[in-house]
Length: 349
Ligand code: ATP
Image (cartoon, rainbow, N blue to C red; front, side, top):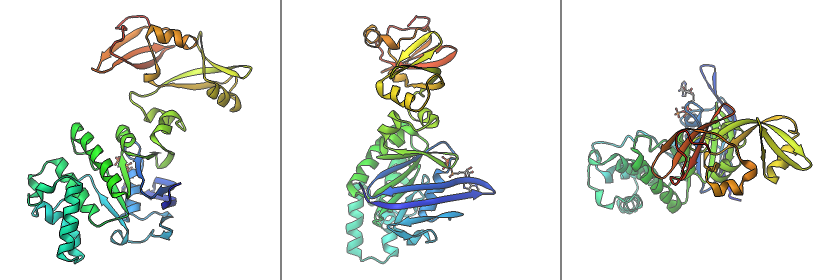
């Protein structure tokens, strides 16, 4: 078990009478890459600002390494922040931007030189030291912003949608860079994003938030396989999970789900959960990931007890995959299948 570095304890915050964070509890570990994920306005940035000391909670405490830092100003905390608008000093070159904080602290010149060179190497911009920052691309500027924050050797780096302004290709590249950098420096990264793919790619743990309330804190794998509620189930995964109302029928210790005329057999594990949960005879929501739906004959044989018939309304070829849209009992569904599929508009599957 990794050591806990930060504890947010019963944090509440309201703006103009509107609750933004509601008794939030969060334990953050040493050296972890934690992502805060949720739709716009759910309180991610507010959480980050409270961590960084840029906002004070109305209630609750921020504990850092066992000490209460709730009222400590940002510059006294061992955390540094990288914002989406990286605000580099435009009149300074790359080297001076990174060295700025060290100069303020009056560190010796040779130490500054050493540290800045190390950072330039870390973010892969050794050749750019003398370049003016206004002559750099968005991705390069963001790397300088990260170097500038890391040169102060914080114990935690807070990142608020730092890749939001970059195009998709550069974003992907920078995600890999960031992961590498975090592993290299070995400190805690806390990263805010509303993009679930980004949160899953980067985070060793993800905090899913909605309306100022934590929905689930888990590894990407567990969020995908064992979502705690319908919100998490629908927020994680692309395209979105399909949901069908079904009646839970129990025969001995085997449960099945009845959807109209179809009866779908389910795994032992899920049977047990439904029976133990007292769902026998009740209507439940069945979640099916688009990538778990098959239309090929061999799969039909393998899963003959989980077969439902439908007609494809639309098939969309997206290069490496095909999205199939169809209805089951009046509910719109999506399947994500391989391009080898024979299904096309109007075909029965
Ligand atoms: P986004 O992804 O859009 O940045 P978020 O999850 O980071 O969203 P927050 O920025 O934490 O959300 O904002 C949560 C709510 O608090 C929003 O409704 C926002 O309008 C409100 N809010 C945030 N800061 C302030 C402020 N200084 N004054 C008033 N309201 C604020």
